[in-house]
Image: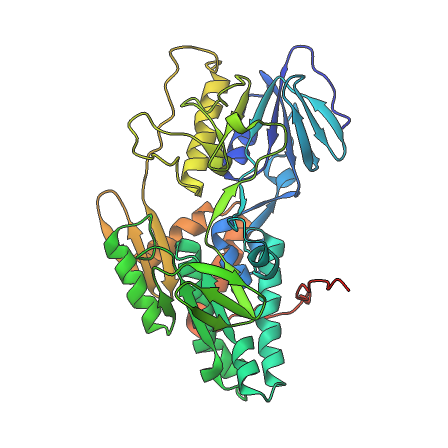
Length: 432
């Protein structure tokens, strides 16, 4: 990897430049450690706004920022663009596609990947939305389907192309459903006046009895009401069984004919090869309350990939796989490393401080749950915009996002409806 060895500095290798890994990479003391950050991309992605890229609200460069630009002119810091294939924990080495590297301390912040719960057909045919390339694929798919529907005379085929089924009623599913519904309301009449908009249907399927399981029942009910007003068909207590690329099959003999199934129903930790079954719980790396992996005291896991249970069992299934716990875990680890506390017995355990959660449903519509108050409507929408705007990395990204939002608000127009990179659906090979 062409990284020099510093005799007086211990090497900390960070795998993953998500919310947690980036906090550590930016703030670790360079006079105490040599820091090596490894990621498969050369940019950090602000994942909460991926759905806006997918629905032509923002361009990808407004939610991504160069890692080298974030951490620049810093001594004893190295970034390498690589895929980590295996971790040799016994010999303290990582094996990548560009070479091997020794570490004194390893911090794993690889985030999460889409969880299809073992259904291979859904994994093959459905569309995930966990990365910028996947969001761009989805954007191309949506716009291409509108174009294709113009050329189809068969009404059933037209409906199939214009039917969008979103599986998963968490914040991502709710926000995506609202954004697609607004495309139907504001974009189609202007861009496709000769297309019968009544053929477009949007379904949101949720396996549990309500939307937004991690938020209050008041917010869940408000989101349900807002989506219904936008024309979204919501099915609760609805378990998806299979999808063949044309029909999605649901329990109790229900089905929907659609060419577009978007899967937001679950995620799991992105675990690198090298760990045993004892190190993993619920598809995440098991860590103690110091964020150390159970069997390896010099290996840490933070963010979505880490499974940490509080001693008071407020989060019996581990911390939420969202940005706030990841950022707090990153900052916690930085404090311990910088103050040389990582091997101290009296170190304070990590505790996640839940400052609130929020979701937007569309124009002037959002819900916010804070410890002291619950908000909905326009005020919640303004707060949602402000929080996401200030959380974006880079002044340029904030200006671009804000400018796009202002234009869209006053002109009811998404200005980036461009099929830059056409998307081609997968086809299974037939064995003869």
